[in-house]
Length: 551
Image 1 (spheres, rainbow, N blue to C red):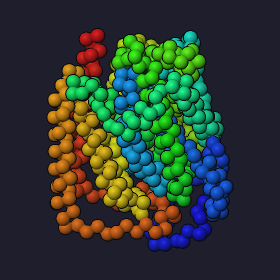
Image 2 (image 1 turned 180 degrees about the vertical axis):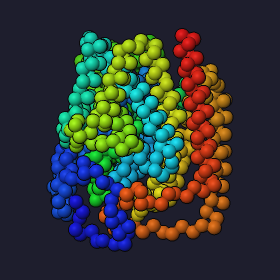
Image 3 (image 1 turned 60 degrees about the vertical axis):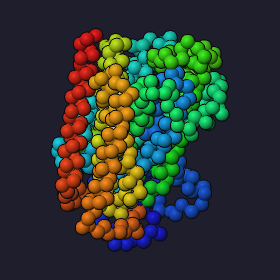
């Protein structure tokens, strides 16, 4: 699969033996839209050849992005549109660079290392963080799956279908699509569902939002309602961030890139795949906010969001029954594609940590544990949905949102550390600009996470308290940055990174790598992160339990 025109240089010699030892992860790239043979080393010089290569590579970036526009996203974006019109569209534009930088780092880790995200965390940061990463991912993903099936029930209810039968059928489709023993067949189903997400575009034109107003709000940041509604608006903004940049995305894309057998040689094509996914997800999110804003503008329902089924009814009142039906079908499609991605990310992570064979290239007999985790998670989530009532489902949805907000900063921190680990990425490690941007993103995510946690524990939190949290985090960020630039680099001289020949470089087997040395600053930072996660999760769990008992 290596291009013969790429010269072999000293940088490549460090990886004489690759960490990819499982034969299921080595071989032809069999994508939904094409195949690249392992022995195909023909240079991609013409437009036709490059297009065919891109079509074969398309999948990981597209699926991970569209999978994030799931049932929870429908509720979040719908709430933003119904309650605030198009005034929060600008948040989507702000999230584009965050989406790209985060997922580009993940696909780089997958293509270069051949090892899943959870496994890298376990090996490079120890058993505590490895176990923590899998346990929190399992819990969060299990609850997220329940929200996907809640979306199925809402869509089925609007369409007049029996809810129990719809949930069982959706679970059967989700499980059966992965149990074919063929990566290519699974990806074809997933890409077809991704195409189904574009149903939001015709609904958009049926509802007729004001394009000029949307264009203005897309590039003009505003906070609707003034300081009196800051707390409520901030909660919606945090929800948008949490539903657009989710922890499971990191684990899913890295393992999916590995399972698709993508190597550094095809990095440029995979980045294009990622950009295609980002465009599709942003277009879908913007269309959802715009059409719900137009559907409820000037009605009694404006500012009174309840759930996605009510959105469908409002769209029907505005643009007719067909528009409402298409919206319900789009919600059903989004719930299933979200369930695909969330279930797979969990099965991949557990397979990584426990050494279970995990690949869609294997049949059920060849990866029993992998398929058991996948099917078991789907079945349990479907059962919880069927056994729960509307109040319990609302509580689960709230807990998922809060838990994702609490865990997202830590997931991004580990991603940043791994992408600066020279033993892991060699000539593919981050550059200074990527590090600076990601560090700023971590600061913003920590701030939003603190606000979200505080708002759950103290529902009546004032706008002044939120501003104090933001100011405190800003001051802390400035102090940390000042310490790093003043003392962090004192006495150290960073050697320039030799990136020549990196198309041939793969991470050596993990057992051959030297363990990373933890500096004092990193130990303090990791300890603070551990303490914050522990305190925040305890506070959130206590509050959720209190809410349930009071009910």
